[in-house]
Length: 185
Image (tube, rainbow, N blue to C red):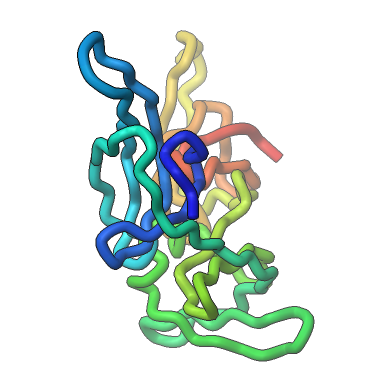
């Protein structure tokens, strides 16, 4: 059991029969009445996010997310195939279950698979990944005003904004959380 004073970002607990993970929290003490905990929580199975307020001292069943190393192998129609590098067991997961994170998967990428009581929930990607620029317009000489950007299509068909000096064929590092350009590799 866990109470509101022990909750923090990343805490996984059961509430109203569902498993939730704390995304954001704030302890609040109004001038009148007892303390409260304001939280933004994400349903670990559906991915939906809601905001709730709990009274100080409320208790919940704490759940533990297990992380297992996996390697992404390939896409098979609408399914993505992962392999456990220890046992070489393969699992096939619907692309829709991974949401936006599926866009950044490249063959042979090592990821952390998230499990709740042997139920596969999703994957944790590295914070950034190197990707090759497939197409972009050439930068125009003289366009040197600071922070000028242009669109570029990457090897996984994601289009992001990159600085003018990036050329086709170059490899860049992209933040997997924000889909933004970080640096040239």
